Image (cartoon, rainbow, N blue to C red; front, side):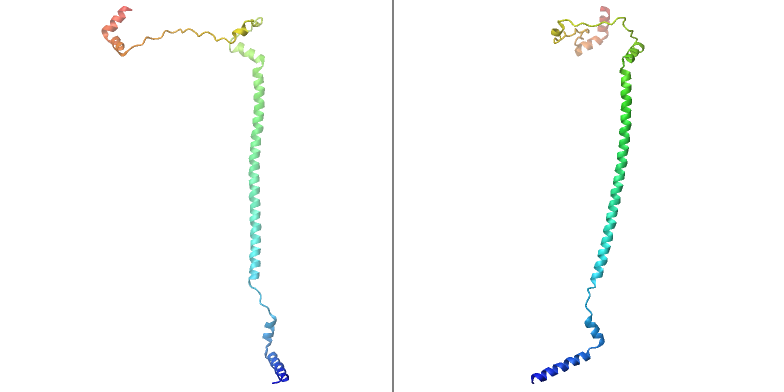
Length: 171
């Protein structure tokens, strides 16, 4: 076979092949294969994004709730502090009134029965007071007499009728 003949047969077989291709196959040759998972991925991504937004909104709502409850606690504490400051101020005023010289004098005369001195008496320290300030005062003398020690035999003797009678007679 010659090359012209081979070329002619090749053209004829190509023409036959083209004529044998149906319209349906020609449409298929123009179609391309599409990945079916791409729309599912988009759907999953959309669902994840919506879920993420919902979670973020719930987190913001929870944070706002926490802030509001803490603010309410702060308001209660501030109110209590204000009340305590007011009470402390009233107590300071009352203390100043109770410590006033007029009040002390009135209480001393009415409740304690004291009378005011006609002339005030001023104490004058002596020169020897500084030297004696460091001394220890003498120990006080005991005013009670210690009891004599008793033994069990002396207690038993004192409780017998004859001993008790003789002891009463001696007195």
